[in-house]
Length: 221
Image (cartoon, rainbow, N blue to C red; front, side, top):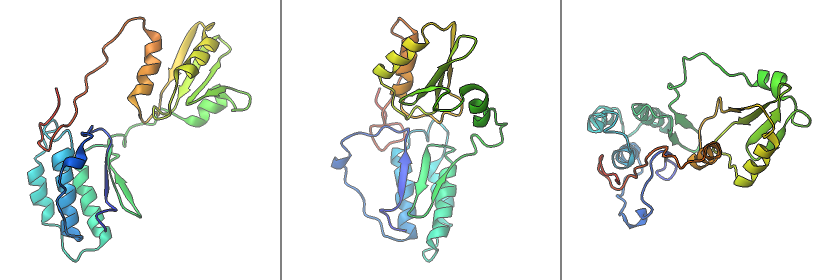
């Protein structure tokens, strides 16, 4: 398993742009080297070790014992994946040339409350005649004069021009449903751009801190 193949996708951690100024340590291209490199990436770059009360040093001690220099790439991948599952983070994924592991226990074991087939058969209809599409938005007016917008993923960009046209079309409606069920998330800009159309006041929706250094508590204000 080459070091270059291992990719850790920390989608929720905002890292400094000037990472090119930081000297990268050299690791052996073997199971021990890959383990040490991945452990250090989490140690220095993952945002929530302290918030989740995770003793990452203890994790190192536990999992280092399982790393055998002669182990196969598949066995190494399994152990590294199990180590990452301790984070309980659906945004942390380990990828190699043949496999990707991700933590999905956060949504397993719950009843499914969304069925796409019912949505299209009963409400939306077909794309050719049942509803309109603008960027990531599918929309129509129901028979009871209720407007409906289906937004399947915040990762699909929605521009102000799209919103102008969609909301103008739905303006005569007596009410509006914005359906974001089964939306896996994405770009915060898209969600706030839509929400901004429903308030006339500047509204604080949250704060963001950026990871600024290798320490577990190195954050911007």
